[in-house]
Image (tube, rainbow, N blue to C red; front, side, top):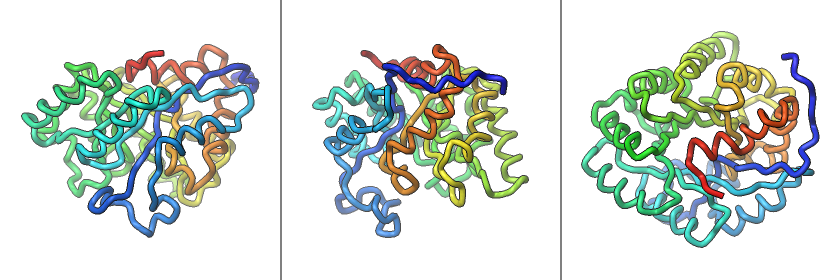
Length: 296
């Protein structure tokens, strides 16, 4: 892409825009089971802080992280906000509210926004059996409430069922900031036709100025987790969104199924090393700070 290679990250700071915690209790995290191997255990704030501190990337320090919901329950959000109260490295929380019930959503927003680190909402659309969830009128009404509060809306694992709907959402609600997690889960390695479909919707989403995307969750089936293997996705994201609308996230602990945290972040930093300093810092920190309204 004609960009000079600059691989030194002297004193750089990173906001990890995508990190999870969970405590296994009966009835919680219905998607998570023994089939998920090492993920099927409790992941605490103490462990996360240790992982961030020992990221092992020379010249780069993780300034803090954004906790992102892992369950469509109020209890999950309440637990993350409690962690934020006692852990300054938690810079923001992306929680959950009942989007299908606007009156209840408004009540919960009033409660959660009283906490200064509640900065966005997410719903596990990929676990919802309805392909039209993001098009439902009550959901749209709730998302308008988010926009009035200046809160972002994260969309996880959007491809193949929800990426087109995410484009419609961003187009119809230009006042809402829409965050595409994990680049929409591109089907890299699945063949030319699926990648073409992903690229069409991905570029259509990027055309909406109220959208941003996360370089996160890119441990894809059958694809080696290396900078070289991820390069097509990186170049596509950079061309479509530009550095000012991209942010970096480790997706810990989910990332550990594919690579340790330090290697997960390291592969992304290798690609980011090709940017000029100001561009690189947007992806490392600036975009997340702006989109989520983070302090410090």
